Amino acid sequence: MSIGKKSEAVKVVVRCRPLNKKEEATNQERIVEVDVRLGQVSVRNPKSSGSLLKSFTFDAVYDVGSKQNELYNYACKPLIDSVLLGFNGTIFAYGQTGTGKTYTMEGVPTDPERRGVIPNSFQHIFTHISRSQNQQYLVRVSYIEIYQEEIRDLLCKDNNKKLELKENPEISYVCVINPSRIEWKERCNS
Figure 1: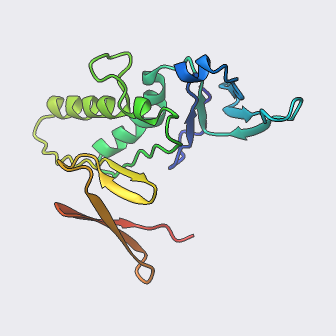
Figure 2: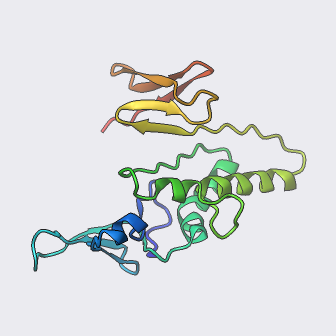
């Protein structure tokens, strides 16, 4: 993993998964190269032999051999430490279907080596709370999926129920409406 500036408010981290069994069975070739030291991902056009690689640089990149705790310790632990100080925090996983978001975020919760961002975050938060004295905490968690422009709350009992998104450009806030709660999020004006 390549480590970027520690003071950044937003970190852009990329994790590249290995080929899956179906891709291996159909002899798909790897077209992505990862340079962990430089924090770069390079992509080759598979339709053009001898084509130049297009390289992209990020705060950190993780290759196929990366461990869940490496990613968590760099990209998430400092954020959770800030949350424990009272700041809000968001971990946003983005990518096409099948790119490894669920494994990275959830992993295998019962296996400490393969536990993902969410169970590691929960363990971090609740271990801290259990060791605290004379302090009260209020923990609120949202697990939202945006897929094909539809928003769902994955913690809701009926996670097939779609949430509404309302936007008012005059007051620069976005509102996600969930029947059980309404959340206002300040929108960036750039």
